[in-house]
Length: 87
Length: 460
Image (tube, rainbow over all chains, first blue to last red; front, side, top):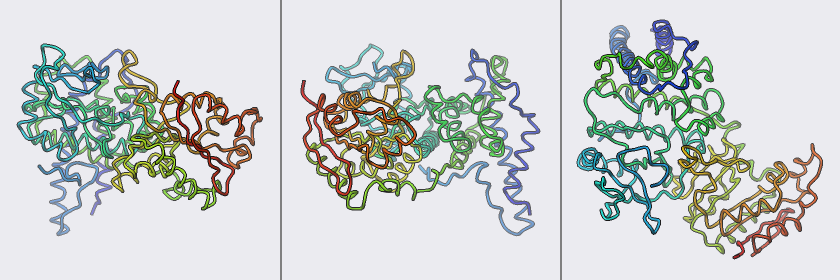
């Protein structure tokens, strides 16, 4: 079974490749306001996170089905912070 | 109006003629303010110790005709800034901000600011001091302060944890947080393998470069975020912040052992503690600044008696250990602070008035400078009279330790340099300080050649 660490690394690399991420050329000119663009990229980032959550849910179902138990959640991915925020 | 609060049209801070602090809430913020109170969010956050308490005050105090309410917030005894916090302090402030955002969402509100300057340490815990930081949440609304949060918290914490803890000083230069493109350049390659940093810093920078000046071309739908997506985003930031850690070199033992080291015998160390206690009882202060406090062993002699004590040190490791101990023991009267006394925090921001210089943030009743003078006078060439002058400006009472030239620590400082400090003698020290202080008590510390003084500022 692939453990959560390898799973995370795999996805991290995939995300980098998919987005063609590189620092080169990403320095901002000082007179531009990066604030509004952060709103748009936030939507993209949230979509990626949503995708990762979905994949994780399905992945735990698959590994649960094969291994007969639930996979451990990935602590740096999404959801379920340990502290109590109950209202 | 207080110079730090001019940006927000929702309201501002001001002082009345007697110097009491108030906040005016403007008419345009009415709906949001009412929602904060009526939704139960204010009660929830204040009970959780996450938002500052306030009382309603007389409307006659209003400063302009745009006033909707006047509120009187609790007073935070010492205002500190993120570049003066240890790693743990900044991390806890970040987590408090995100926790507030999550609770706010459940009450139909969202933070419109995520500035580190809105968080202060009060009774040992991070607390939001800007009551007007909330607005009603509209379904589909993105998180407006996302970039600000990344710049104020995530980027400095990542740099401190993964590159060098001293990089928090970039916050002193960049008042709105560390620019993400700069953070991305400074972070090591292994930062790419942390999902939260990959997304919220590296991809964020990429997106900023890509979309800047193209925001008006984007359809409104592309700026929409469902509430669930927003929750996912906040949860991922929480997990990312929690995964960042930093340990002071050598672990806790090195720091606790540092105090006594080879400078004192056990008898001498205990005697110094007794003297500090006696001197503090004589001065009877309500507030104190311990300069060069290390991990705060002597600060605690004061704070354990309920004296609010700012415990300053230049070493990020010492301040971190001090803070951790404060959290562990739930101490309420101590404030660990990262300050280089030879170059303390200046006034910064618009017109140099938004954030005060360290020395302009109140006057403690007592200043304490233990095993510090030789660092200032010999390592940094600050003349004794100037040290005395500055201490006299800071507070009314002074507990100060003189470490003479024959002391091992001073000999270490002089080992590699010429001794140009002819006035650095007990007599020279007393003469310099007597220009500004009267010496109330002077005691030799047992088993040592060091002397401890209690001094009071001269009235003239």
